Image 1 (cartoon, rainbow, N blue to C red):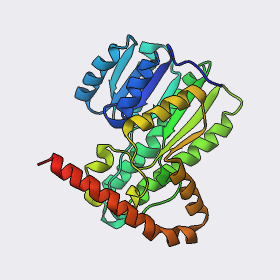
Image 2 (tube, rainbow, N blue to C red):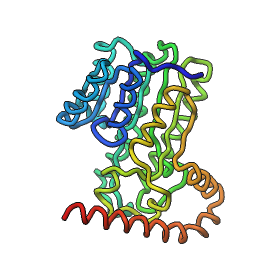
Image 3 (cartoon, helix red, strand yellow):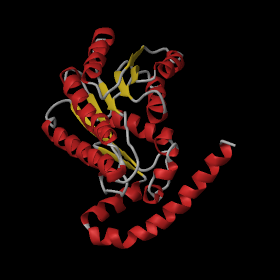
Length: 278
């Protein structure tokens, strides 16, 4: 069932840039009140000014989602100052590219804290409030790497697999309530998340077309409106990923072809960003 987002209270983590920034603006355009959470207070200040121009309520909360105390503070402030929670968007993400044995343990632990423990923790804290909404939404931003694994992203892929599993299981638990759980599974997105570490990103990551943050933000807002369980972009890559997961021998067969295509696309980005930094 589709809903209007006007006057709904939306929480977005990882709001200070990329997908979170774009989604915050789109929710505000729809008339939703927005609680923006991220570590960078300067960027939240900048985003707040932009959102206020839409005539909606804006609450900025400096938040490190890897810290339980910050998550509790975020939910408490939203309830106290906005009165309720209608939509929770678990968008904050973290990775450290490279082979598993080469990535420091503290980085591996941070990937798990931000990508998996934080969404579960925030969902647990927010759910009692979301259930009071006439049509609540929990939207988790996962990844195509949560459908099929990729070398150099072992723990990141692990967290996104787990987030998908959590989301589907929770969706079944909440089937007879007014809360819908939604998943967004993008391929590579043109954000600093991968563009700042191009040399460490595996060629296979770039095998699908690269989306813009705005394109993925649009999927988040659509899910908030219609409650669809899962959206994948690019769609054909999602289909291939599911086939590859079910048929590992086929994945192994076509992976060299995909790596070759990914290497070409990655090279174009390397050339583009090396020129822009000159």
